[in-house]
Length: 272
Ligand SMILES: Nc1nc2c(c(=O)[nH]1)N[C@H]1C(S)=C(S)[C@@H](COP(=O)(O)O)O[C@H]1N2
Ligand SMILES: [Mo]
Image (tube, rainbow, N blue to C red; front, side, top):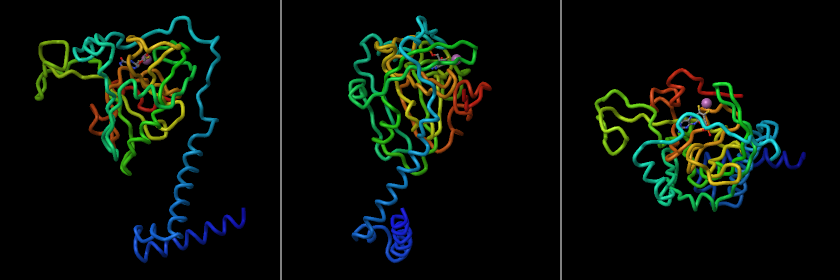
């Protein structure tokens, strides 16, 4: 412990000196510099581990606790033309888009998502309306996707853009794009959206689920992909997720409160 600590302090002092002398390129070019940079990586890992302590996991249940009936809620059958086309072809051409403040914008087919490391969890869903259901969810941890895309330093929030129109904005300046919605007349479709911070984004139980109770996720529960975020209320669990955007502020999303329901008065942090 003690020698390790001394090495740390020596390396840290040296790091400052070397950085002052010639910047990171020169630092990385030396054996000493490589050691110092490696130390930074270890520190990042340490902070991640701290954030991911098992004590902060939401409760998980045995198979026997799974609800015989899991109530579908909110949108249960999107009428949006683009979404219906995806349903009709079994989501074969579905791509999840991941962009915004990332080093590498990515897009994933369902097949690609299913090939990534998966997590299964049996958890209780609590809706703000006062009902609960227990379900088994399987999906890819959001952290896996974010790691592949690489967050830029300014990244603060993850925004989920969904396929389902909740209402039509009263024929604003942007005009009704007829290909976007199901309703032919007036208004820009306002589709469901949600957001979380990076702590929740990297939480091990934060997954994009493509299966429920061991079967392909059904349309009423958010096919082909829905968020599971087990330490928060039901409305945070975005269904029909099409696009994920990494942002530095929620100000430009909807009316600025971070979600469809948040913009209508619900709490942004809906901890249970
Ligand atoms: N895209 C989308 N996601 C949504 C909603 C919605 O209407 N549209 N409703 C939310 C609410 S209030 C709840 S309780 C859950 C319901 O999920 P379930 O249908 O699987 O029970 O989805 C949440 N996610
Ligand atoms: Mo809900």
